[in-house]
Amino acid sequence: MRLQGCDYPDHLLYDRDGALWAKAEGAVFRIGATPSVAWLAGGVTGVSFKAEGARVVRGASLGSVEGPRHFDVVRAPFDCTLVATNRALLSDPRPVARDPFGAGWLAVLAPVGSPVGLSQISSVAAEVEARLKSLRIRCFAEFPDRDLYEIGVECSAVLVQLNDLLAESAAGTVVHVVSDDQTAEIEMERWQGQTGNLLLESFRDGSVYHFIVKKR
Image 1 (tube, rainbow, N blue to C red):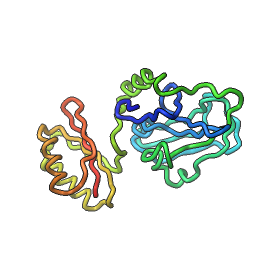
Image 2 (spheres, rainbow, N blue to C red):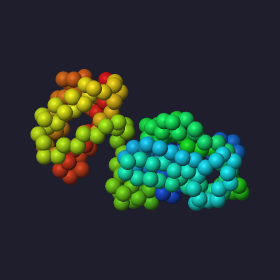
Image 3 (cartoon, rainbow, N blue to C red):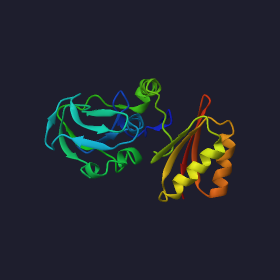
């Protein structure tokens, strides 16, 4: 299921805020942050964890995820023992934003008692979507490495800046471009054809256009 552009795979379980996903693996659960957390934070610049082996009650902190705009506490969805943590994220936290359901997993938990507090996304979709809207969270196809905000600037000038930025960036770099030029949609399509780079997604919010582009 997609809510506000954010993925919530149907085979996983979620807390009522839609901020945490969980997957049963035998007697334990692997958990991670949903894409909404990274978009609210403006990227992920650091994570922290409690010590492995710690007993944590439902609602208490397992660790944290932080970014330029927001600091988020990761709370236990049920009473548990913290069996393992994804230590690779301590040196490179980017997978939390780029691959939240894969390499960006956070921890493995062993329930103490019944693992209550988790639901299928179909059961909490209305609550999750309402929360995303209240926080003005809208996910895109890929999480950007860079942002280019140019309001009140002609699109042709924006594209000059975008080309300069990509010229000094590695292949695979993703940029979020924001423009209020009414020709932006046409110009971005033309830019994609001329440069061979990728226009992954576009979205209009009122009079403002958002584009996610990727360097080949």
